[in-house]
Length: 74
Image (cartoon, rainbow, N blue to C red; front, top):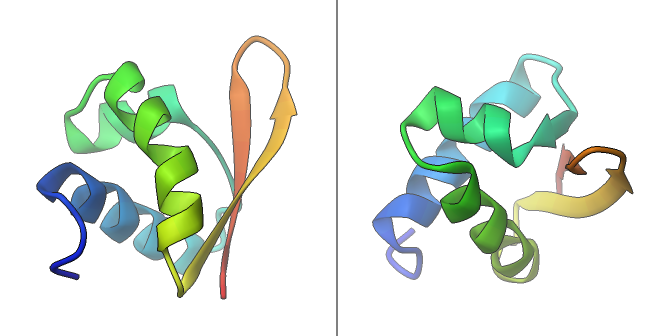
């Protein structure tokens, strides 16, 4: 995972673990609270991680009050 920044590694690790327990839909705010980053830090990295990550598929899913991301294992 050396091609990822520290923050990206933390986000990907959290997503892998959460998807492994059955969770599929995420908001940046909730990810940020769980790993100690700001929602802005997470939200700005998710689109880049969607392109970079080979084993975790991150897809912009819906937008109500904030963007929801659908995450599955690739």
